[in-house]
Image 1 (cartoon, rainbow, N blue to C red):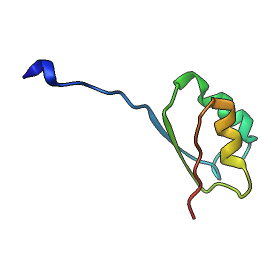
Image 2 (image 1 turned 30 degrees about the vertical axis):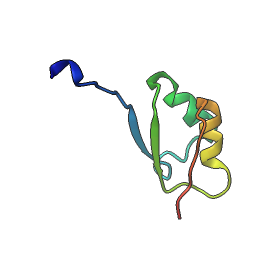
Image 3 (image 1 turned 180 degrees about the vertical axis):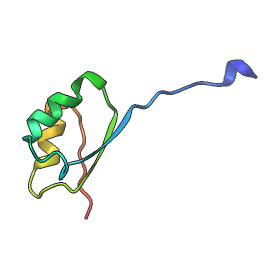
Length: 67
């Protein structure tokens, strides 16, 4: 049965944008690049396309902004 077990690695991060409002979204994206993350959870994000801009820098296919 041991050979039936498969593992999957998912890299996650969270980041409070208000705390790091010193940088543009592109700069935040560059900061996260070395970590090769699968998912990033942002809190206190300003309006507009902020999350999408970070995702573009990281080559992420999807971005989602909750309410």
